[in-house]
Image 1 (cartoon, helix red, strand yellow):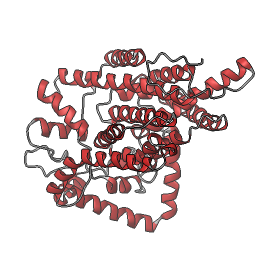
Image 2: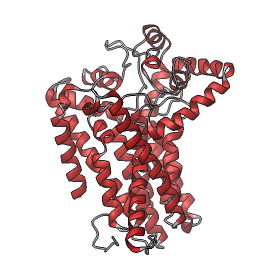
Image 3: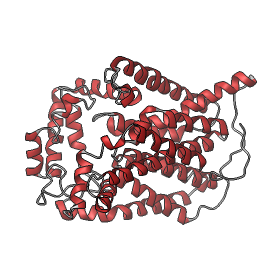
Image 4: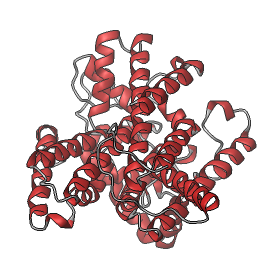
Amino acid sequence: MAIGLGAGLWAASFMSLRGYQHRPPFAEEHNLAVHLALGHGFLSPFDLSATAPPSAYNAPLYPMIIAAAYRIFGIRDPEAVSFLMLLNALCFGASAAAIHELARLLFRARSPALLASLVFALHPMFLFYAGDFWDGMLSLTLLLWVTVGAFWIGAAAERDQRTPPVSAVALGASMGLLALTNTVHVMTCPVLLALAFPRRLRARRWGLACIALAVCLMVLAPWTIRNVRAFGRLLFVRTGFGLALWLGNEPVGKGWLDAATYRLHPAANTAERRSLLTLGEPAYNDFCAERFRRRLAEDPLGFGRRCLRRIGYLLIDEPTEPAPFPFLANYRWRGIILDKVLLNATLAALGLAGILAAQRLRYRPGLIAGLMLCTALPFIPTAVIDRYALPLRALLLLFAASFVWMIGVRIRSGQWPTPPPAVTSPAGSSMRLPI
């Protein structure tokens, strides 16, 4: 609690000092919120008129939150932006607390948990996206806390305690809300279910997993039904995967969503925007997927090269892009060195080393490593920007901090740390943990 509160106050102070009002909500999620605030409904973000076609371009939850702020305070009014800033600061603090709890549960020691949450709170990329009025910080918070919740449920089952169906219901509802915030995180559901319902439950694990999946689908159902009525076809949450495949694999770009690639996006390209509005989002998405298939047939090796690049981008960023952080904006090469080398590359190397060391020392990091892979997989064939890599880098940061702790224990005591008996109580319990 104290860690989350402290990190949230720090993020709010940082954003206030950096002038968050100069970077209010913009682009598609803002435009969707404007439609909602004006009573138009969930209409296309590429046409702000009341007669725009229906949209499922973004997952609905965060645009609805922006719209609620706009309805209460006024569209893009300073008070609305301040409300959203405070929400993001709350999410930032909650993410730091979740990183702490996840490290505590995994390594069963205070020191790696405190170090991981401190590094998260000070990392400039996470601070920058705390001031980004998009779904990134909210979805990161939900993903981390759903993971912690799954860990709690699974740890109780490992102690031979009965796992009540209400735990499966809560997990399923959380997964549904996560999908309505950022649909990419649907990929993490198998790992979350494996965390929550371990083999010790035997046959019961399948029944509990089915309950969780059913509840998840029930949470998605109202939005899915809305999409079926709006588009006349089954569409669980959103469109856009075909567009991402095509954009990320055109020869003008390298797989990173840079300026040259963005010029093809409907938000920047008049012809593409006209096609999207004329065809409708699902048909335009199919059209983009077909363009990608033609491009793949023409140059399969180029697609493979871009996928390999994107793996590197997810870990350390695009190496020639200047850092987006305001305090490095005027120092292109200094920003590249600090951001790509000292931050991302170092943390990636330490994080991967931390996973290997944790596995060797029998801390059982496999499912968390699998979760990291699931958050990255959708972007390997499509396109990458920093915001897409937030969950992967947050978990890499956790393992990097834990690896530093392991090295410290080895230097101090002459021995590597070993897992003590599992401590599985929620944060705030009175159970004593090793340093």
